[in-house]
Length: 596
Image 1 (spheres, rainbow, N blue to C red):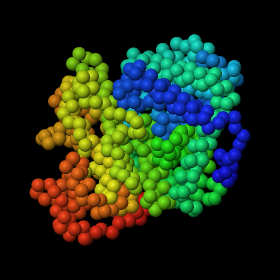
Image 2 (image 1 turned 90 degrees about the vertical axis):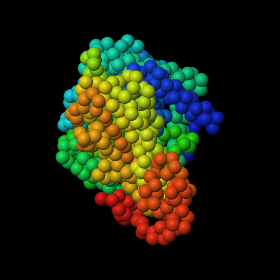
Image 3 (image 1 turned 30 degrees about the vertical axis):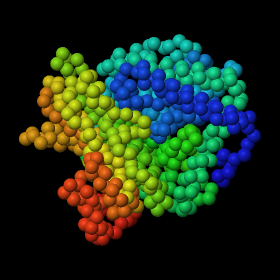
Image 4 (image 1 turned 180 degrees about the vertical axis):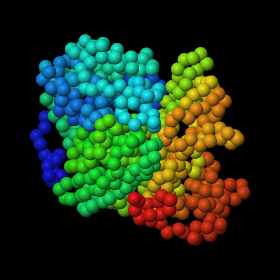
């Protein structure tokens, strides 16, 4: 279908002023819903790390406004398969976390989706949705997720799409069953209340919008917002993608059970009429929990997240129309068969995002962003001195890739999500934070430097505890592009510098530590963009002075020689840079024309 047919001319009831008012109202409603979740949830992963998401949909279940978090698919369709629209009533609430029944709309079991239908003039007119990562829903280990899992049953209770409230009356039996499966039932109960309160708030705000402008006009404005997003993304993507076939391969290090590297092989076919993404040559599903049940809209959401940026267009279902077809092979790591484990799918999800950026770089000759590390998750589980069970679920930030116009972001977890403050860890868990700092030299060298990862070092104050570790991009670090170098990698060390020092496997569980042991987690960075010798010596000097680049690496990677008093030696730098290494499009363990 030609591009103009997707979001072309059509008769509309909305006008430019109404469009802007509705756009602002939707963004405000979503922000208000998310603020409610943040302020009333009980689990640290939601309250402190902001691992949640709120969204509003039209009457057809199409996303109208949502957070800039490109990992989701169609969350409304799984509900409609069991509860047709005509059976829904005001006050109903629907709930699920079933990854396979939702075809990847939920991608691992701790993520709970709650949805409320919204009625105007007696007709189903929209949906309000909340999503949040619950800290523990049962499973083989506290926290529900473990590198040791080999089937999804080990990752906690599975909730198929169910109606948990009918016309405002909660089905308490369902919730009691759910709470009973958690090791922290009061925390889960509080998170559930926060999630439900958020969608009730979204429902009220949508009803107010319908009452102000009328059902038909608001519905038409929703459609116009989707069309606007589609037009903008289509124009930007077409400007980057020449006609033809573009291929890219990225790697996941391991599944934690002896399989690796695991390749994601993507082919983007671009014609004047269609854009098709074929992932069918990716490796088979694996025994360990890094399988990613990828919903077909996800790659388009990745492109939209990168290319739409901070523009006026909302990240919504309009982006899904830009990729005409996504081909997924059943039995692959991106479309595993039930009951393959999915708990650590974040590793593969992040490599999927990097692979999409790789496709843009191949097609555009290195004019897109370099790769990033996969955000790090580690658990510390055990009992305090009084016997109370504790679970420290710590997600750590990493560096993101440099761009053609600027350095990569330093120490970002994932989009808007945050890190646990040191004061919070010290006051809530039996640990003492000894260090929380930038991890120098992890940002890939380049004309624009990749973002750096960080260091978290804690002393264990509990009698005994178990460490679960999830780090990727160690053996296959994030690639640099257009002459930029690959990023530095992460690791986890117990008792660094002591006689009993040991390095934990990047994807492992069951690591026992004791009171007085020190756990040091180092995270990786993002790839560089452009040749490092093209970076201004003054920028390199500033990076050295602020601790992002070491003096040795300034000379080795950037060709910038510093004097004893940390100033640029201009003559020595010119001499050092005269022997300029010849670059290629990508860099990982050396320059390469293509990655495989």
